[in-house]
Image (cartoon, rainbow, N blue to C red; front, top):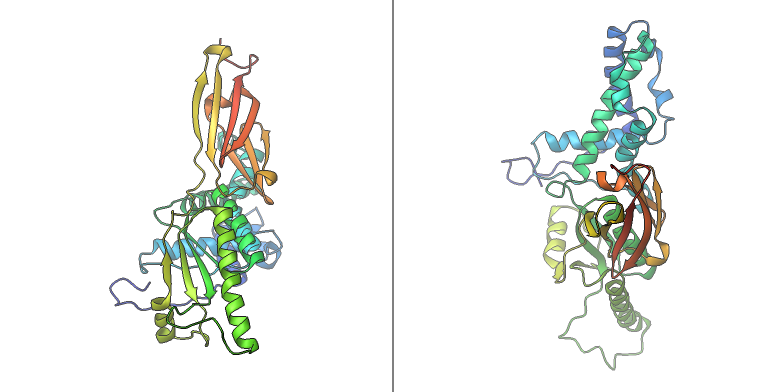
Amino acid sequence: GGRAGSGGSLDALALDTLALLEVRWREIAGILEEKFPQSELGTVAPEELSALPGIQEVLGLHEVAELAESGEWDHVVVDCASTADALRMLTLPATFGLYLERAWPRYRRLGQPPADPASAAMLALLERVADGTERLSALLADASRVGAHLVLTAERVVAAEAARTLGALTLMGVPVAELLVNQILVQDDSFEYQNLPAHPAFDWYSERIAEQQVVLDELDSAIGDVKLVLVPHLPGEPIGPKALGELLEAARLRDGSPPPAPLRPVVDRESGTGLDAVYRMRLELPQVDPGALTLGRVDDDLIIGSGGMRRRVRLASVLRRCIVFDAQFRGGELTVRFRPDPAVWPK
């Protein structure tokens, strides 16, 4: 990527989320203190807010979204932390919005004016934060603008983690653009690998090539014949534009099916009418381990869990007046069946 019209330049930015928190809070607190002078929000130090779980990660995501919205760059690439931290960060905006709405629904927040300046200031702050997290959630689920690029190595533990991550991203609704397998040893077909001299280096190289192929085969068994970008293992660390360009040229594409699409529930009436009707909700979950799949329901949400990740799926309006009576998972598709609840079904 690069600045639009700049001929392909590249900018790098390291975000200091604590400093970002201080700047953002000073801006917000100043506005609120001016509007609600008796609220005392201006006396809260940014360092106190840093103790709130996830606030720095959400601010970092918000800053990235603003960079993307600015139009100055063709592409904005975010190098995420470890898998668990990255997944947690990506779920924070939707999680915050969900629990804020459940704890204090917007129609209640806005339906009755606050009785005192402190409550009014808190309401204004929450509304501002809620709007921001809603925009972030929508952006992360927009396949036309956002794509996750999952990088792994051809090692059993890493590949197994990548398969779980792929399932988690699908469950979260984050589009996966491609899978890149790094540090692949390339076998030169013009070279004879048989009857090599007895030397540990030759043994290691040939055995490592075979082991990587086994891991790739196991990955195919776990996630299907998904398209992969195979990046070779070079003797030197690729630093600088020239080395990175050579690495890009050396990478090769292994054809296959595209990565799984984000979660998209399909709801229809399977049979019957009225109180005898059977409704079903179907979801494609090709990368989810059946043994790790859990289901639950809380009010109007279906809770789907897999590999330590949970996703709340808002039920369609017709299903909210139904009870779950059956669920099955076959061929990578989850089917949940519902029957009307006589206590709340329209008569």
